[in-house]
View 1: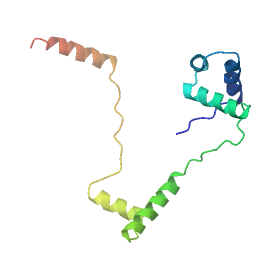
View 2: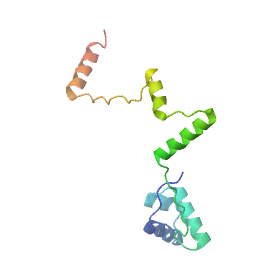
View 3: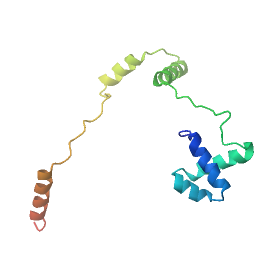
View 4: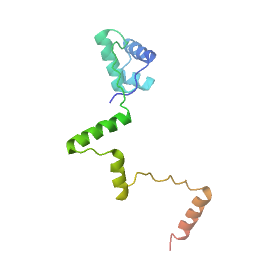
Length: 126
């Protein structure tokens, strides 16, 4: 999977360091960039002679609604049915399968930690 695109200055620094004879692993450590990224940038420079990205492919993220819509179309076409997503949710809810997340519990306070430590020391040889 692709990550963020390198900035122009970072690409130029990688190429400049490479041309001055610095090893790729040292370049990656100094600039905080993965070794594969440094290697790919140098390969592109050797192939094109430039640090610029000419035809950068931009991967667009699919919208969650579009993904759900495609999933519903696929599901309904494979089952030869036409269920609305709310109908499915209603049936699942009636069967006890709800859509929820557990509430976050608060961390222990300093007093609670001291009390637990004291209790465990008291019960150590119990």
